[in-house]
Image (cartoon, rainbow, N blue to C red):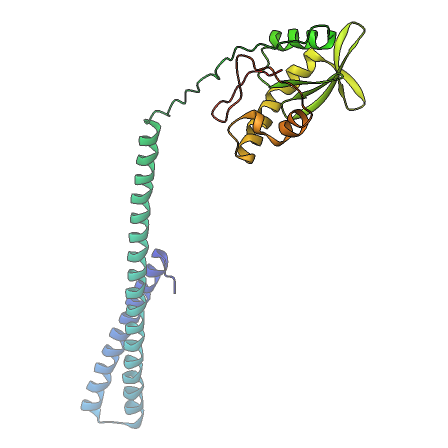
Length: 243
């Protein structure tokens, strides 16, 4: 039973009202007692005395019940006050923690720039496609290992591509059309370098030349590979090129 402050005040007023009624009844009982002693007891006086005595007992019970309601109400209110006090203390602690965190500087993450690898692609003499390919790889400082397979085909990282000269420019076949070698290197170098690293980790090899795609397309074909300045290994995010 939820008793608010207003209800508690109403209950107290009701108790006082009942007490006033009891006082009135007691006065009436005294008057009846005097009448009985002076004029003698009558049936009507006896009935009225009995009625008022029962009324007093009934009102005493009512007062007792109202007092219990007030005690319960006070206990509930005390519990609510304790809950509010505990909640206020919790809110204060949270606010203090928030203020303390605001004063803690965020860690500065310094990312080391990827190592710049000097690459050198050795072109095959007399192969115009390979001559331009070598020039573009060096011009874009392309880190992706590139191996000439012959006939315009290259192993670009893990991807086999076809190149040819069209209108005096080197292009790469992409889907059903062609893309300039410049655009191809800019668009695909970073992605392909990630694929090389991923494949090396997946196949658990330490060297680019140990990859399955390299062994399949290059070694089994008996293509002679000339090493150049840099090489892809499992502990390098960037790597040089191969021919």
